[in-house]
Amino acid sequence: MNNLPLITVGVTLLCGVLGVMGLYTYAAGRADREALVDRLSHTGQITDGSRPRRFRGIDRRLRATRLGRRIELKLAATGLGITPGEFFVYALVVVAAVWVIASSLLASFFGPVAALIGLWGANTFLNWQRAKRTERFINQLPELSRILANATQAGLALRTAISMAAEEMDDPAGEELARVARRLAVGEPLDDALSELTDRLPSRELVVLVTTLVLSNRAGGTVVSSLRNLTQTLEERKETRREVKTQLSQVTVTAYAVPIFGLGAMLLMNSVMPGALDRMTGALIGQVAVVVSLILYTIGFVVIRRLSRIDV
Image (cartoon, rainbow, N blue to C red):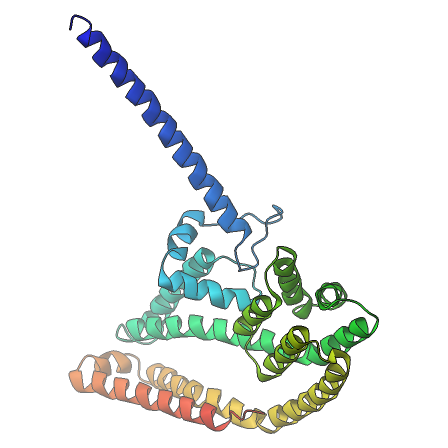
């Protein structure tokens, strides 16, 4: 019992040392985890130090949310090479700028409205980039099918043929196939790697190609003849899609021209009668009229876009 104070001090010091070691281990593990997340990011994050990443703290917190995961999934299909945190910050800056510009050019009432339109525009921008990249990938599918058929006919395995196609083809097909090849190199099944590709770049043509490859690999069918026939079919669908897009270009321009005309009319009215928009939105009936007109313009835009959308 005479040594009780000494034992207490010793136990306290031991607990303190173990606590410090535990905190150090936790911090080191957390840093390693964050570095691993950065390397394995699906957003095409550059890991060779060629471009420093900004807003790392915001990016880590955003990835843990549902919104961050949705942004990350869309960015992975756009090929923009930015992180969800960077896109989130840039979108907020654009929304704030649009708010200020609309409030100064039109009226203070249009500031929040313009901010909401800016948020919608940010999401539309991602969808547009994704659709554009998907369209470019679809245009490369006949060449991809031809390369896979030639490589398979030469006796190469399908995994090797995919790696070879990733080296020979330009982006976006080369980049997307390189991701598939990396997944296959670490032991991921072919079905899962190709299914992840179709989830990132959804299209009927890609689904048909992936289904052909998966079934041929699983059942051991004649993959060469299947790919030869698929190449001709993809070429025909490519030409058909091009003709349909050309025929509907005028309708697409009309869908964007309708809301632009409305905005131009408001700017013209405010320039002819300075302060007219402030007086109009200062009353409740004026605010209701503006909201109703915006809803009608939105409905018209959506309807025109729906009418011009033809699945081939």
